Length: 301
Image 1 (cartoon, rainbow, N blue to C red):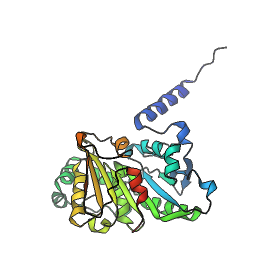
Image 2: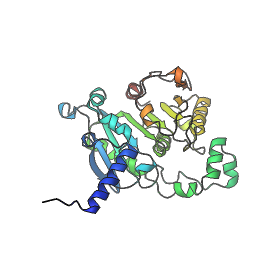
Image 3: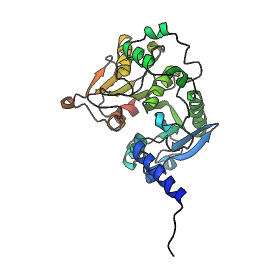
Image 4: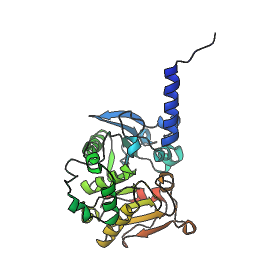
């Protein structure tokens, strides 16, 4: 007897297939490495160190991974990004055993009170890239103020530090696009918590204080041809940190668009022939070329 597949099932499979293709979600095999959980109203996934059972008393690093705008929701699936697939590979996990926390927000990676009421005169004083962006992006401030869940993510980290043996001197944060901006926001709000940060294609909004994060090791990436988040956002952040003797590396990926995640999060060294040359804000910067070796070498100041 011929089996009839319900139309709704077909539609759901098509939607899921499109989601996997568009957002480079991890494979089903690697997705299993991330246990679905919920803290308060914040869905999240947690990947434990691969050798946790063998070393119950060992303190492990923890990585907070912040999704971009297309990961918004409460399905606890879209928050898993392409670099989370890299981190779920057995070879990676053997070299860098750690906890990876992947929360999901329906809103923005801000804390309450981070977004001021700005006048047109205020915006006119912004650096060029930000001024143009805020003036031409309709409803940008209203969108930013729709919700702020970074505070809950911080509370989640405290909860996990109580549940597991986390190395408090090796807690990291990273993300792309909206998650890149969230990464900047996270280290600004709690610079004493994070040992290092990797923001890609994000922005360090101009009303935040660069002096506050000058001691945090940061490696920023941005595509020079980004038509979603202006490359000037990261250029400006680098200039601001350079002016205060900060600890920031900046790799501008010449000719690349907004989607640079799978270049940044597998970066193994500069390529001058392609124009990929890392700049350093001061002599304090660790010049390690491999992105993951650099990250896990950093310890809280």
